[in-house]
Length: 347
Ligand code: FE
Image 1 (spheres, protein in one colour):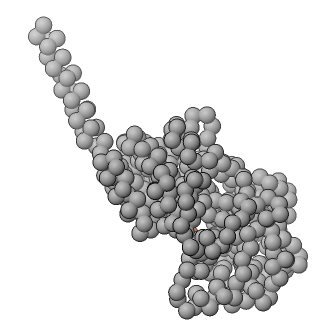
Image 2 (tube, rainbow, N blue to C red):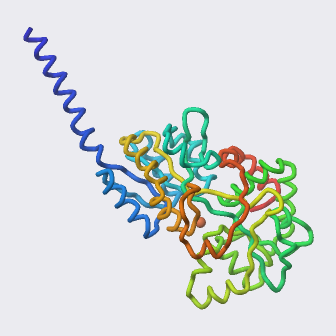
């Protein structure tokens, strides 16, 4: 009797000990974010107001976040991870840093083609905003009709005109992953060879550097993510105004496959200590209000189709036909994309 009581008490205490911290910690969410936009603070404040869950935010760029998650391993306090580009999200998934999430809200709000690694048990990651990979060209040196598609950039008629950032950058790897999905590996390898022989200069710099290169005429045509172009379009700096006036843009592949689309997205961390709060946060990101903040922070489009966009820079760019290659396919083609780049000498 005495022993039974003691063990009952011990069990109760153990239950209590387990329950108390777990309960207290339920009001916290550890967010690892590669985003750093002013509008994000409003996003987090609103979530805390609605749910009572406080957000501890750790901000770093995508590579630093990945490195940190690898180092922390099973002891990582990360609950939610926000990153940009399907190539990076896929890499994190492939390294086992995420866990599958099953959520009616997420499945209803986020279109299937913007969900990563969705194989029955739920998705490994979700796109919450979209960006497009556009073509910019020098209005004096290049005819728009010569650069209407991604494929056209590899055509001999554009010899000595093409600029891009490094082929191994996630933005390029994702585009190539999409090209593989549409055109196959052989045709994409030919495309990569054509690009290399058309370079105006070896790949270097970021997307903004490509816009500036096109403006000075060093490059005739370049590939850039839409938000870099939108940001420059909104800029009041004299040198940006000057540059953007010399540059025209194309929504690529409007008569064929549509413009390549990528995502900024998020996932629940593999060992999330606050899994429930993490899922709640991802669900919150699909609300109309959160979608507007999330997308506007970086001049992107909301992933949830019904969200109203009130961003003058984006509206100024007009509507376009988007590619419908699923982000999962882009992810699965990453290794083939890198091999093609290596063989083509696309640095
Ligand atoms: Fe970027």
